[in-house]
View 1: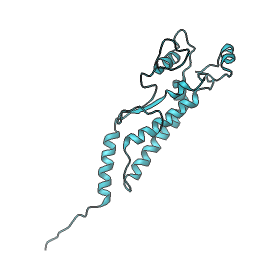
View 2: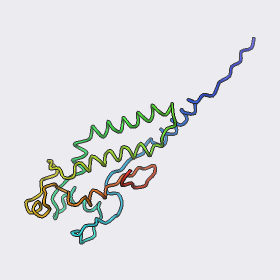
View 3: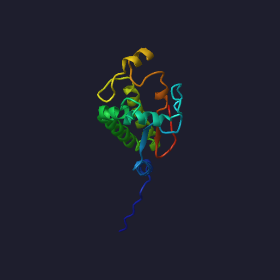
View 4: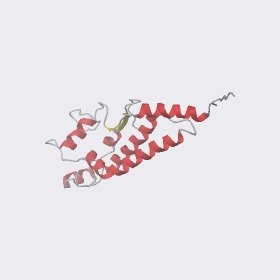
Length: 173
């Protein structure tokens, strides 16, 4: 008696290969959010020609001539769980759908996560918190409002997202 069998190729086998490729590409990949280029902070009071990154560094580290305004640290403290859950949900969704339809590129998932973080940082601008003190009276009088780190939106427009797969800096989706 002879027993023979055939293995039929299934669509899911191709899906598994795509899933493995996705996991290989995203493993160890990173997303960065912040002032990532060397663009100069274009503002009349920036007479020294500092970059966005330098300007925010002065605030995060409280260099002598600036008030300490830790926007990034405050965002990471306030939204740590939300950001982690968002990232987990995005990746789980991608993994679950990979077996039934073409999987999207991992850099798109990283971009989604990056833009979520970026929105949390943008929402921290203008809020008084333990790490972002209120403006001084003279500043409020000059600006016409008391929102720290908000004048005309120039600083926020410098925020970007970059992932280690595509490596390009994106300001908007």
